Image 1: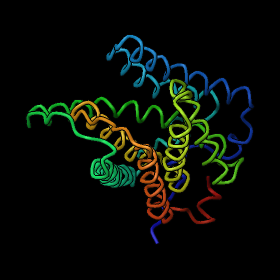
Image 2: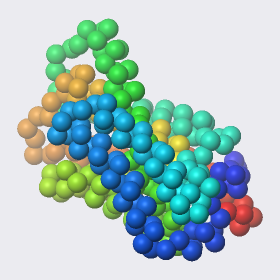
Image 3: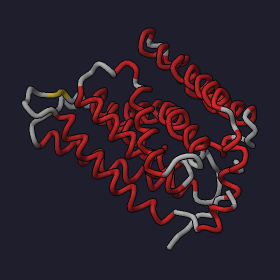
Image 4: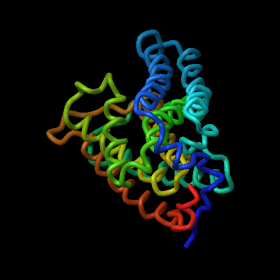
Length: 271
């Protein structure tokens, strides 16, 4: 069974994790959150793409500064590790995410819950897909640091694995402040999505699989809505529930795939 050696990847001794004060944890979270939501505000209300992407990029150095202020070595505290398996984890998450989300889109179209808009020219399709793929990477990474990596860094020693997964999922829902009044199906979807994205981080102790699968979902979402102009049809069974079902399937896949990265007791004692 493949295992991951975690000492150099985590960069946060347990004594520091346990000793960090609650006010420091909250203050650090708020600093990262304000940076992230500054970008969200710029995009949502002003359509300011450079400022949006700038704030998402700024989450990385802000998170690094917060880690050092709190006594950690750097971004490895939040699972942002550039060790041997990070590329493999990232590509595996990306590939699995693209396949599952593409199948989910096909299923909603086949069931008639959604329909395609006018077919774009091939060159337009390729160009816009690449643009949206590039534009969604930083927001995916930034949100993963805020709602998963930061929580993992502070609470993986204080909480059980599944308690932390559920806690992270709840924070992920609350982070979508503009969707909190969208209805129960949206809130359930966001919570299940949060669970699905937290599972790989908790089992690999590395954020890159999560970033890959998160980015895949954002790519498919943007391509379907902004490139293919997919429209939701009137139905007593909301398409969101179908997507939620596929996210649950993806959560199970993530669990099966990443369970093999669980460290041994000896390796855990080193972290």
